[in-house]
Length: 97
Image 1: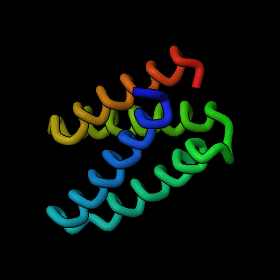
Image 2: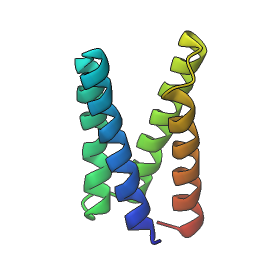
Image 3: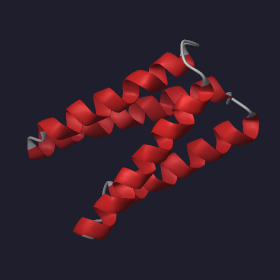
Image 4: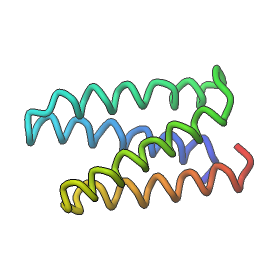
């Protein structure tokens, strides 16, 4: 799987999580935040922004969910998103894209 596909999967996961948060909990913040965070990732994947922007956004997502885990002590969705963010960030940095 190439770096572009990995990033598309992460974007889909981010947006799906926002939709689930909206549907299950009525959280408008979830869907708005996931959409706002997905926009620069899409721009990176389409070549409009440098890859460093994706690194920063993915890092921010990981930190946000780490804070949520500490604050709420609820493992879902924090732990899967922390793991996914760390994995995608590592893969993008190692692969150089």
